[in-house]
Image 1 (cartoon, rainbow, N blue to C red):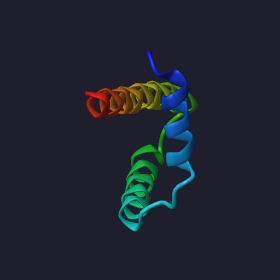
Image 2 (tube, rainbow, N blue to C red; image 1 turned 60 degrees about the vertical axis):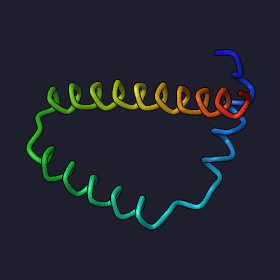
Image 3 (cartoon, rainbow, N blue to C red; image 1 turned 180 degrees about the vertical axis):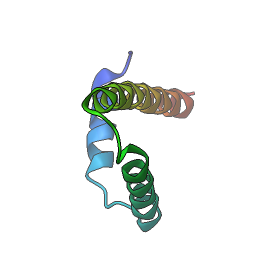
Length: 77
């Protein structure tokens, strides 16, 4: 990544921002659906689900970094 320090700075400042109501409502909806979906999971299924959740989180993090890199590139050109 060419602009690692800038990307980290932008991510840090973004996470300091107030959460939008729309985001909060969607997060609440997801948590409710997840709780309903996982309520009968065994210990092994929970482990599998947790690993899946970690992998999705890592993918999301990569996506955010790519978006920031794109914006930086776009603004420079």
